[in-house]
Length: 324
Image: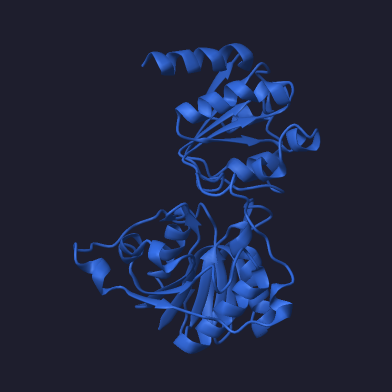
């Protein structure tokens, strides 16, 4: 069987969520895992992909398809699924992964299951699935009946596990430059990333996230959080109320209507912890809450809590880190 996986990049490397999707892909029987990457062929992370069991990479270069066009990306996956005889097409359960696979389902007329935690081939045209529902508050058991299974992998469902490879393994990985045939209708919706925002660690893949809520006090209050995040090699995330007030852009929002994060450490500063926010950060390995309210709901989910004013605690943390 052949499994086709959409791989997103974080800078020059495969995104952590895509490595998790590749790890799940290897569990689908005895598959041949092939990946699709929208990038320049000269910058394909062949060694990293080979380390996760990928045998073939199909590269769609910017000269052929520039920017993010969800319907065009789905059209590429549809063509490659037919060309490779894929029995399953999957992606990480990110905003892009879910959007592209939904378009793919519409193009092919096949069902698509989002945010799966477990996928088991059940012989022939069926797969048994376990997937998140209600923003991860429930797990649903389901059976998908389709000649080609389309699904995304919940971002916190699988740990990224590489295969044992030798130093020569990357050379055996086949790189194919694919030039799709696209209609104008496939390119109606297209997003381009500005140079100032390109590259760097994204909120969805960051290993450390410093979150700020209403308790930060306003736009100027985020400067210490930015400094702390930089010292920890992380990024800043925010609660919904912060974006509603216009203090920070929506792309930094953590929660049910924002980004679901899976960092090693989530430092929540001045965030009360509404259920919608918890749905976005529950995948964090460790949560530390800084709050003046000892009854704040987020404390029930935190591994550690500091009851105090973040405007005093954060500068103290920054000073301690700089001293080290």
